[in-house]
Image 1 (spheres, rainbow, N blue to C red):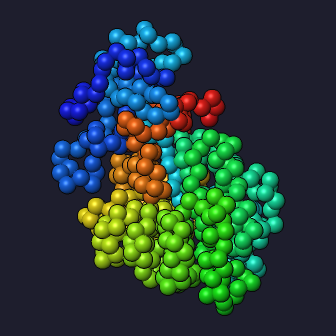
Image 2 (image 1 turned 60 degrees about the vertical axis):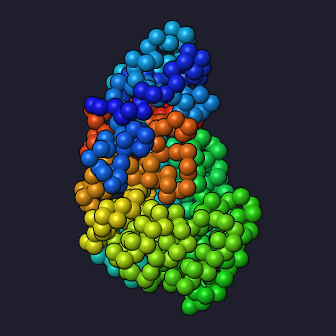
Length: 437
Ligand SMILES: [Zn+2]
């Protein structure tokens, strides 16, 4: 494999090479770094190297960051200067950036397996709704849960994701639909990040559904959503703002009102768009230079161009497509054509995607949506970071956070190919290997 030219040009003076806190040696690395010729959306793809991969490579880590990347040969002479505990010999295994699940609803109360079973016994969605099921059931259970109970229910889902190498996650509110419960959800999200040493980006999704007490008063509810946002933001609970823009949820005009408040607070936006219909969600996100537009099965090419112009990430969610037995594929080919970066995520939620495996999600992205293994892995690393506005995560590059996943695989495509086998061997967060996975 040809290394890109700059691969050998980093400083090799002795003081640098003996200054690392930790060195990883004998690694094959999927960098997803343009500096190492990653470029699935590059204009001249002929010059790109799949996954930005480096073989027989080494990584120097200092102060929680990636301080140096080079060849095994470059580092060998300096290894006697290090203690054994500072060196990890990975014996030819693969390292990727720590995975990033950029669209989840993992904090919720109860679950809906009763509805799953009832539907398979012949009940209709209308029957279930009439009995207080659907999202209303999750809202009731989430409102009723104590903060401790909500934490305990949600941490199981977080742990399942972390066991597959997830080192950063986005967690949305949206099952409270009142100020106190939205706050409770976002607080639990923050607490999960603190307890488990995982990066958590919180997203305010009060514009998710109309709560029963606002029946036929959607505009009044949106007014409340707009009033709660600055309160929760001032409490440090909101990293981004989201909504559900659909015929069965909120119109683009209603979402616009929420986005205006977000803009006034300088909080980035994202949106559930074009999952079931096309009512202009992605165009609205692009107008507000949003981080991401998510779902997108019904997205038009015209709006893809707008997303390309605003550098908005397309977040693809095959778990919901699978659970709903949807048949309308998202416009993957047009997204490629216009070089819109694609991320992929579990969309873990109790109704349409009770999915806590990002590896299985990658497989679904390939099998259901014809994404390539390189695209789904890029969509769980570099572009997932972009979808969350995390400038120091998602690639293996000097200056980036040393969030890494170590895999016992023959090649990166194994991660999307295998179903149900977890080949994780180690997880590093901010330069520290996790003791247990
Ligand atoms: Zn969602």
